[in-house]
Length: 116
Image (cartoon, rainbow, N blue to C red; front, side, top):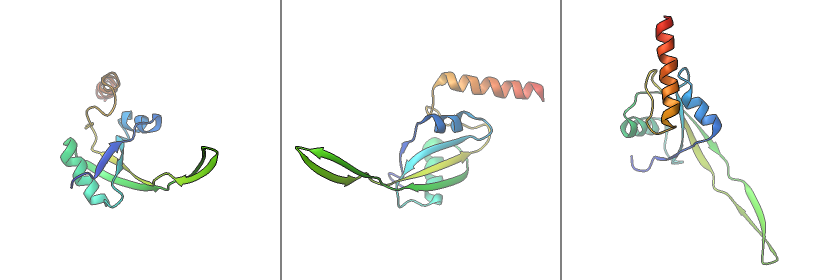
């Protein structure tokens, strides 16, 4: 179970997925050899949340070229595996995004409960 989760992927799109209380999805870069069951167990153990679903995708590496000392050098970036993890409603992962954002999520939840 070591080193299955490499790092969280923090972009505008992934933050929007995490902040939306209806979606409740978090995105991580994971080990290429890890399967969905291993990813689910690793997230549940590391963050103490209940995982409902795990979706994975492999982003292929890209070819890159540059000029070094007057010569063309070719190479590739490495491929990564992404996991989009859906957690149970009402749960969230601390530290994935800022506290001010969590306050907004709590206000939205309070408003929904008051309307019900």
